[in-house]
Length: 129
Image (cartoon, rainbow, N blue to C red; front, side, top):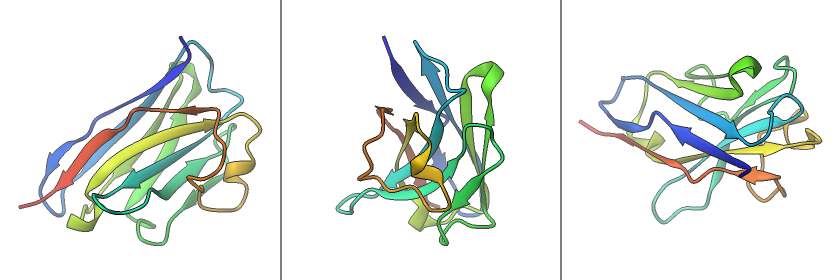
């Protein structure tokens, strides 16, 4: 099986933090850029952040810049999204996706319409008091 699995979602109060994980199974993420996306009920999926294969390039949506941090640990075949100072508008299902050629994370916020090689099933993040 070749898949991505997200984990780490849950219910958190405004101002709280969560760390999401995106783990690859059946393949290595070493040569893939990875993007994080989210989708709120009734809204289209939007790009949140992405990281290049070598981990040196990152991009963030303006709405999360300064609050979220993307990172990767290729030894663990995992990409993380550290989410701090969470707001109710951060609520949604968070997905990760992997792109072999890395074009999806070249100087831009990831585009959910890009033809990623792999998508995860998503993990729910709810920010509410």
